[in-house]
Length: 427
Image (cartoon, rainbow, N blue to C red; front, top):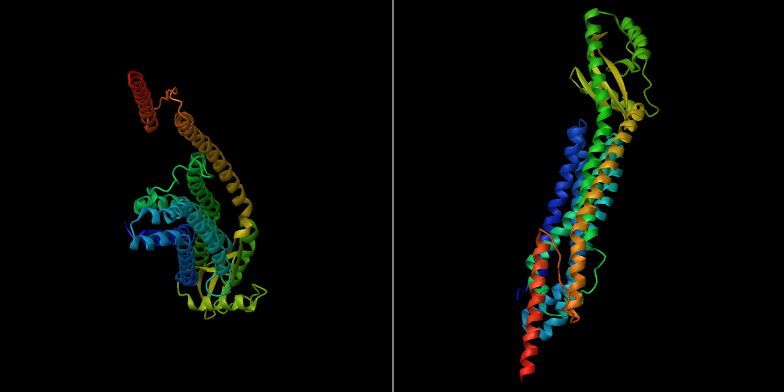
């Protein structure tokens, strides 16, 4: 009998959980890359937290997974010294009960850990050190962590059951009386398993699409800003206006376009009056902005002023020995109304798809459970000695095959009893 069942289950559980964690991290990064423009500095800011979370999640999982396999480990230790079924029986029974609960416990732990990991990551990314993350990016990370945890819950539950069936068969088939004790359906009946398996996956996919649609609305508007910025730059350069004439044009265009624009030189001053611009109540924000103006050599670039404001800058040339930039301010909050309308539409679509998915799942579960319920009732009657049941259940899948074989078994038992009765009468 294999003496390392618990070790095999533990190692494979940790391995699959670690791989799932890496997939979660990659999914978060891919969604952010699709949705926005991240720099290397953003990855540097997020990397220590992600590495810590990987280590934290793996450590906590290792502790709990090991504790939840202690009875199986005790069976392994005894199996090394004896093959006597009388001695192994009690520990095998305890191990069977433990292994039945293990997949659900482990999958719930994975979901809880990734929910907490998402919260910790949100708190870290909102800190003011390093590169700035927009609020919506942090929200997207948290949503992805939670939805990924829900999908991981389903994946871990079924994959761990597969691992147990593959590596703990010696324990699962051990005659302990546990098999006969399965007289009632537990909390995870087939109907709930179907619903809890498909619904999180469907909901996660639709929710991610809704989140991307919500944020892509603002990104489309930002791209419109970029085209307007480039058009203004071309017009300013071709017109050969002075700084004062440019400022007058900006003052006229700002209310017409509904876009906040201003000029700034690389010292952070108004190039016309040469007075420092007051961009924020926080001097450190302005200081970082001025440093970026001096460091950036590109003609056009983005600058994240804070967690809600994005500056779109383009160089208009050198005036008074200073580079002068046209700055367009993109305020994420300004377009929340439009984004919320888009979100409302997508939520309505999701609700309709979820209702349709739930109804289809209900039809699927009824198609499986109704024949099974009838077969269980008739099998219970056979176990009480009633051989009059017919098992007349028609289905074109494995349930139909099972019903046919149960019916054949009932007919054979009935014929056998009749023969035994006839032989007894002759005797």
